[in-house]
Length: 207
Image (tube, rainbow, N blue to C red; front, top):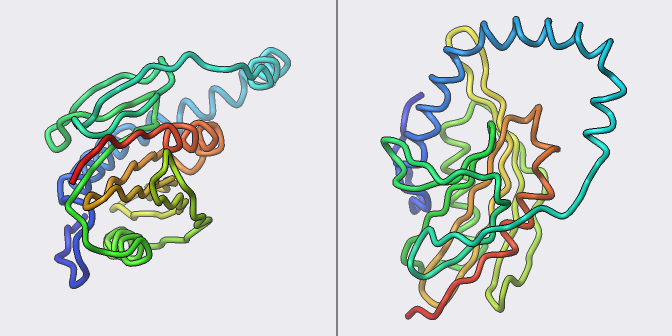
């Protein structure tokens, strides 16, 4: 994957895209194993269908914990998310193949411009991208936008298909972006949870 220089204002730091590049290479290494396991689990599902259905249908409120990715913003995450890091991201949160990354930057843009520039960054690295939803919101008294996209990046032998739910929040002169992502095949498991995480964001006073 190539990291491009953008004519529009760079909303995401380059480290975010290097992180996804690292994830892509890791997923390529696991691709052959994934195919084998998919075939095996497909056979197992025939005998374990009833128990799987019961587990999927049982929905209950999750235990939440508060995290502080930056000194000036707090999030509530389900307790089963782990705080971790990579060579490119100092701190992010992960559960299975789902991840939550928080970035912030000084901002003088309108919300529309910030969202446009952010999606342009993704569009410039993806082979295909589709905006699924784009909704204005107010989160803890701050102007916000919740945007969902699907995108794909093709490798030499396989393709990474990802879905993201972004929370854009403007507080005074700071833009916060909460990026919640998962493989598209698993995204429906996390979409409601991702939106709850975004709506839990609490920016504190800044200038």
